[in-house]
Length: 159
Image 1 (tube, rainbow, N blue to C red):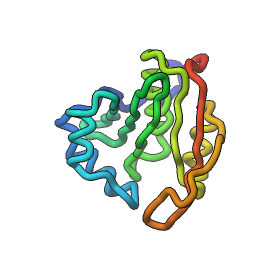
Image 2: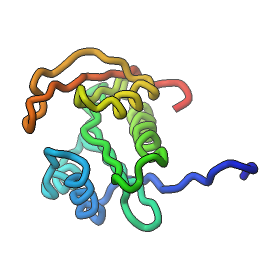
Image 3: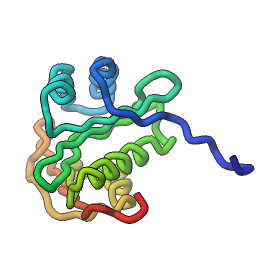
């Protein structure tokens, strides 16, 4: 390692059933409308279109991300980073790993929705090559906030 370079922490791997409890707890910490444990179980065990990744650091899942692969489009369903693990680049690494996986499975584009008020997430997505393409009015049930729809073509260079 070069002098002054930081060691990259965390291992990104496919999510398994052994991760479901940790992911469901993380979901409750991060989102106002969390998915249930059973929703994640169905995603991992039953949904053939679903691909989920877990980021494990120091023996525990501190982040996860998922998407659905439908025809030629990948749709990111969730990305979450534990509040205590933020600022370490885990969210960006997960996003890029999902994009790489989508590209490797011949998807032509990747989409997502994000709260209009979530400027930090939007900045991350734009950094990764996403563009704003529209809105879903009153998308979020908890406060009727609109969702910004974002899109990126795949494959992207240098993922």
